[in-house]
Length: 217
Image (cartoon, rainbow, N blue to C red; front, side, top):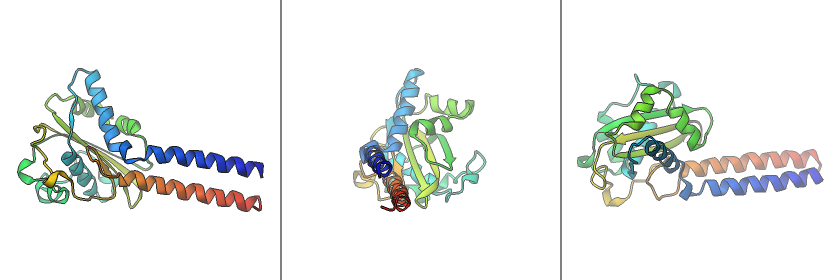
């Protein structure tokens, strides 16, 4: 009985902590942008504007891979025409405001990792480090998305040399609803984080039932 009580207390503490971590104010895509800008400024490169329109397009970029981790790589990526034909309309980005993409970083993992860990995965070699510190960038958009509510998890960062407030402009100032997933610069609820929270609730509830059954509660 004492063991089960301790397990319940630990479970509630874990869920309470995770609930705070997955609040929309703690959007993992925004956190990734924070890590990116911190690294850039520490290497004497200017911080980048977190553009919601570009962030939404980064989420669409992930969606184009249809959950196929094996498709991630320099030789396999969505055609550039997708930006104007598919990504911009799906996000509600005004096509005339699209600006050149000056860099792309993409990673896929079988398990969810923190934004800090995702950054280390994205910056895997000298080429990706060069993209990160490129002084031609002025804006950034990041996104994270699971597949069918779970693994694998994709992280995407798009860079642009657009002009703040006049590139990747959203119709009406708000991105269209694009779920599941999270993208930076967005004030809406982060559906990707919510799905992780739901999964954890299910896991702990199942474990609690197992303990209760084992102790004949």
